[in-house]
Length: 562
Image (cartoon, rainbow, N blue to C red):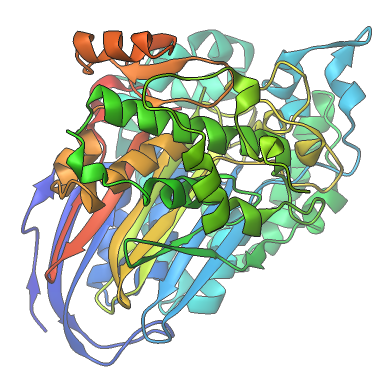
């Protein structure tokens, strides 16, 4: 069996592998010549996924390895104390799957816990024990592995365990995240003990060890999810939160279950688009916007011209208005999904878009049709058998709740802030109503949008992003750059972006957008605000049998991915 290593290394993250391998997997085909790829926003995590592909593992094996590695090398963005979504395309069966391992509210959760004197206290859902929802990542990853994995779990988790126990070089993004969180590090000494050894921000390249986290990973590899949800790790989590005034119990952890959901499947220009259903809002928003945009000859507009960007902004405003009005945990609310992704609704939206002006917020969304900041990471995987995985993981904002559970090394999420707790919105300015209200055992709405695009029956694009609500707009624009403007994937991911989320009524534009374009957008009525970055995207593209991929340069260069 021959192995051709490292044909090209994009930035510090993406690697191609070409080899012949026997099919060991439940996802997979017979022995064949192959190519595979992993794209994440961390070189060390990507290496973990590639190590598993090199052993003959399938896309889910590699995805699980990458995710556990990310839980070590970038706990600012994801980890065992968080949750996420995974979209899987099974090539042999020509079937798509969507796994929801989003966090859930503890049984004792109630809105008045986040108020004092009858007034909302936003910090309570962002920092500390009350901010923590029941983590889903461990259960989700192991559920995906149980159904589709092919290698021994110890093999798949070995890279993550090695990085935790032996150490890994801190990258620029993690160093930047730690530097920005120094004040919180002082408030949470366990967090500082791990991430600011010697009371200093680790420089890029410095080795960071997390032996307690290594012990947790070893226990999970040996005993499965039970040790996290019912064993000593669960007890440590509950005891830590109780001391800080939290309400999570052992029963909350014991009763957590990931959910297999029917993926959302739409079309765009004769392609099949597979994405995540609620409680992700990202998939519905992507399909809604693509349906509207398919009615235009987009490639006739110069890329990132004022006319093109104005059109994108108007479409985004409709999608985000619908997100706020209708979407939530499907186990608690019934959203008008079929209407939101229908051709009829897309046509109605097009009829309301003016090429020369924008409108006030109340103009946008299905309600007008007379019928009835952050800690997230995304990675994409394509294996030698044609299987694909798009996976987005999160602890919500950087280092989540800032609570690191002693003797486990695990940073806990602050996903409670993703519920519609206060009228003024969450930390990202996103507003919502009862559809996304806080309820026990409920999953908060998310903007994560892991997506796989098929040309015929084979993956053409595997894509997703990080960045709170900017995930949706960044993923959409990357898709259009590739599918409409035929950009090489590296250029498509790096191209300047805009973002509009309906409320606040402002159009965010990256600094690279030219001044004359910004002025033209302002003449149309947009309130233009410059931003240094709008989302972080990872993508894999397959064209004419050639695989290419690219990480987003924004995270490493600017260190600003939330």
